[in-house]
Image 1 (spheres, protein in one colour):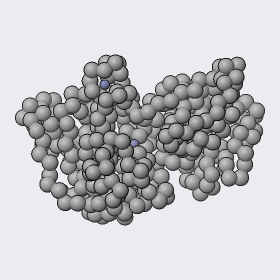
Image 2 (cartoon, protein in one colour; image 1 turned 180 degrees about the vertical axis):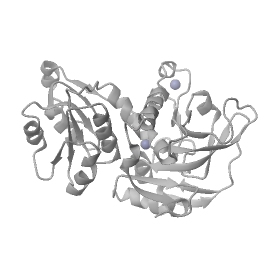
Image 3 (tube, helix red, strand yellow; image 1 turned 60 degrees about the vertical axis):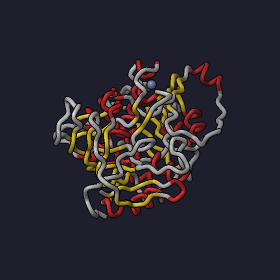
Image 4 (tube, helix red, strand yellow; image 1 turned 90 degrees about the horizontal axis):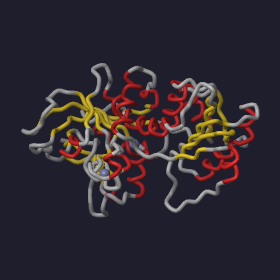
Length: 352
Ligand SMILES: [Zn+2]
Ligand SMILES: [Zn+2]
C-alpha cells in the first residue's frame, strides 16, 4: 500500500509499505478521505514533542473510511461498515477520562501524532481506540469527505458549546482559514443576529464570507476595534473567537467584546507567547475568557449530527482535492497557505 510518511526534518515522502495486519483486538480501516489540518502542517514545519527526532509517522487525524478486516476478538463492528475516528485516545482511567474528556487526558495517544493516522491507504484502529469509543459509525448518506471534516468541526463545537450563543448575539470571528469557516457556519446554524469576520487579505474575506458572515473587516485597511464598534452600532461583540495564531488578534478580540462578552482563544500561540489583558474590563464587564482544545467523543457525536442534518455543510470549506500519487503536492499546497481545506483521497490515484 501507499503511505505518506512524515520523516522529521525531511518532510513527507510517499512510500510503499506493507499493508498493516490487525491484531486480535484491532481492526483495519481502508482510508477513503483524509483532510490536512493546521496541526499537520505545523508538525511538518516544526516537529511535535510526541514524535521523536528519529521517528517516522503517518500524520492525519481527520479521516473516514470503511472497515476491511476485524481481529478475532472484535465484537460490534463488521467488514464494510463506514467509519471515522475521534483522534485523541485517553488513558481511560485519569480524572479527565473518567469525566469523558478524552481530549483533556494528560497521557493521551492520538492518531496522526504518536500512532499512524490517515494519510495512508490502510490504517490500524488500536484496541485502546476501540475501548475508548473513538471509532464512530457514519450515516449511509454522508460522504467520506464530509465525515473526515467532522473532526475539525467537533473541535469547533467543543469551543462553541460553552459560548452559549443565542439569536441575540453578535459574533466576531478573527481569521479566514477553515476553522473560521466552520465557526461562521455554526454561528449561522445557531441563529446569531450578526456575524463579523476579520481577515487581512481581501480575497480570503471574499472566499469565506458566503459561509455565514453578515459583515467583513479587512484588517489591512481598517482598525479592527473601531470597525467592529461601528458595525455593531457601538455595542461590540457578544462572542469572539480567535482563529489564527497571532497575539494581536487575541488583544483585538478582547477589546471588541461587549458587556457580558464571551470569547474563546481557539488558535494556540507559539510557545512562550504572552498577551496583556485588561482585567478591569473582565471584572466590571463580566467577561468570560475561555479556551478549549480538541474534542471529546461526545463533542464528536454531536458535531456528526450537525453535519448529517445539513445544519453545518462542512464540505464548503474544501478548496482542493488530491489523490494518493499527489500526496506530496497536497502537503506542499497546504503548506503554501493557499485556499482553505485540502483533502487527500488515498484510494484515488490523481484528482488535481
Ligand atoms: Zn485537525
Ligand atoms: Zn486519561
